[in-house]
Length: 155
Image 1 (cartoon, rainbow, N blue to C red):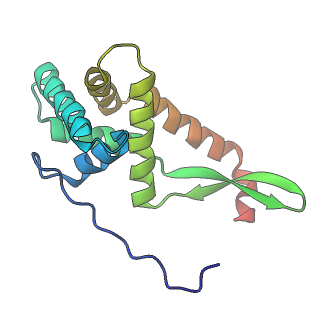
Image 2 (image 1 turned 45 degrees about the vertical axis):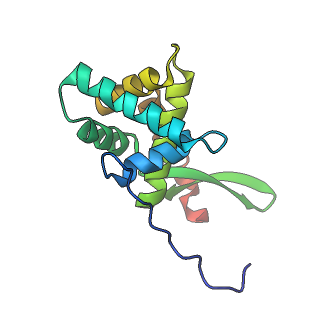
């Protein structure tokens, strides 16, 4: 264990166009080989696509999608007496948001289609409507935590 103090929490800067921290977080997760400009391009194209298809504010749809995909509880593997137990653990807000963003992006990547911007816009709209693979992943995680509730005492 480290003898230094706890790591300082770094503030995420907002993105240049919408001035939103969540968008910058999403752009950093899309990022490949350090090409942040390309990641912003994909993200803004997806936001434009959402605006065209729903005629609503794309930022509100993004917030709603992330909020609905955020898990309340997850399972963590703990070793106790030679056995590994899946122990349900509550998730902090920041970690839950990070998981939701990760799940939304991985679900978008797995979708059929050519353009990542198009796939991302569809996945965000689906998550805002409480459908799609990111929401399914959250439900699956909650079911697993519920099934392993007996091991909560190993926390």
